[in-house]
Length: 448
Ligand SMILES: NC(=O)c1ccc[n+]([C@@H]2O[C@H](COP(=O)([O-])OP(=O)(O)OC[C@H]3O[C@@H](n4cnc5c(N)ncnc54)[C@H](O)[C@@H]3O)[C@@H](O)[C@H]2O)c1
Ligand SMILES: N[C@@H](CCO)C(=O)O
Ligand code: NA
View 1 (tube, rainbow, N blue to C red):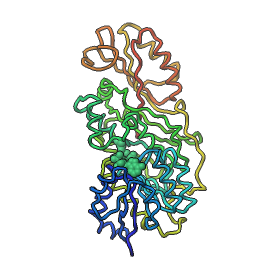
View 2: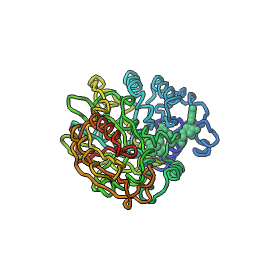
View 3: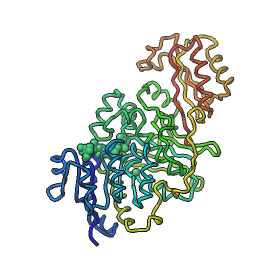
View 4: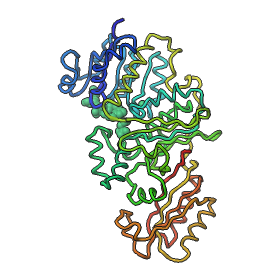
């Protein structure tokens, strides 16, 4: 059988990895796919660099539409990124009857509903394993491997850049900016690194996972998104003293009869959990299903060849299924299109979680009892209280000046409560005259 012809749009970090791995492993891949898979045309704005990567045997063009216009090309790989031209090209590729493979989580989290509908109507596939946790086959696991389960919750380290930054800050005591530059140089960071550090990239990926897990539309606009830019070394250290690590987690939970939680924020995780020990740019996703229990997926979530690994897995899937009846394919979002449920993402005030609080207070009689009374009145149960004197935090960057002997840090761990109740209590705590600086609130998940 003749090789299937593929057009590649964008040959940057992931595109070049895809080209190289496909070349290197072509024989093995062919044995798996049943026929050869060949990138015969590449579009990139930088045609000179593109031609250097692919050599003289592959046609390189500056205008992606030339690829879409080529009737011999059956699969288009979109590795440009963003919601702009990439969206137009994906929609045009679908309209032209071509299957699409993409790593573009931003595009799918925001416009996925429209894109999957168009693909369904046209009878083509849009495959996106590389869009979530790069090389880890998490889409495959959720969509196929765990199909017996009612998924209860998912919690993942799904942004390599921020995990790298948090790990380096904790291990080496390096500054945020220095580590960010390193992450960019290593090719982990998005073109706009604010997407990484502000949690947007993780929210894109969590949005896609929530849709597949529960059979609901992508609802990125309703996700709660908080990044790591305000996290201080002081809290990383206190968390450690309490037996926790701070990770940027993408979390989605099914709340029976109420809705779905979808949120990204720094999270205290017990240090003994495997996921708490995922360091550097590595990703890990914990999925809890009612039948299987808790499962863990670990690996490289970014980088040229790890991401290419997922792109090529999709190419193989699409190649095998290209001639099949669309009814026999795995649905884009795991559930049959007519079986999607319109379950809403809950507003953040209704989220139920536990908390780490740090209050810088005057070290005087009655402070602790005032604090605990406010929490008790709000129905918030305390799990642990720790008081750290000036000496314990010397040299920290707590932001309110160095603690002096008459200032102290009060660290409180709570049991589960509603975010709304916590916000109300925090406003009251903040108004206490003995509270000297903005209170730090970091959410905590036991992930048991
Ligand atoms: N880098 C990673 O580790 C990683 C991991 C997972 C997913 N992704 C996703 O993969 C996609 C690509 O990321 P990347 O890191 O390879 O980006 P990149 O910036 O390295 O590459 C993008 C390429 O697209 C080209 N391009 C831009 N506009 C174009 C246009 N109009 N026509 C043709 N080519 C155009 C650029 O010249 C560049 O070579 C993004 O959606 C990204 O979110 C990246
Ligand atoms: N910028 C992303 C790339 C992978 O999607 C990350 O750091 O994880
Ligand atoms: Na993946």
